[in-house]
Image (cartoon, rainbow, N blue to C red; front, side, top):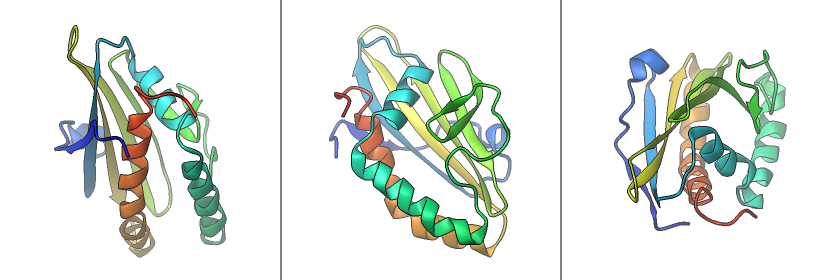
Length: 162
């Protein structure tokens, strides 16, 4: 786990990004003067994460298939393509919004790059809106892993690729 990554209060307008979201968390890493836009930050998080995250995602895909939940890369094409398994819904150099809607829950990942000169920072916010008991149960089960995964992925924005 990277000590430079810290959990912070979400600073996004959840009602605009995912109206009715019942879960929100955010993690931030200081990147100094590094010139990283939101797509690059998201790509480093998702595609260059630790191998144990890939193993967890593979296990998740196996476990949710019998329930008819979406697995990696399923669903309608995204306007901004895919970063890993996440469809990019909107994007500017300072903000990338990815995620999808499923039968049990909808989620968004919001990657923001802010600050000037030597005080640049990247914040990753996760928003979730559940639809039913399956969604609420899934969210409860995945939350502890989610926090470990996001914290580790955020460390890859400034750390070396695997």
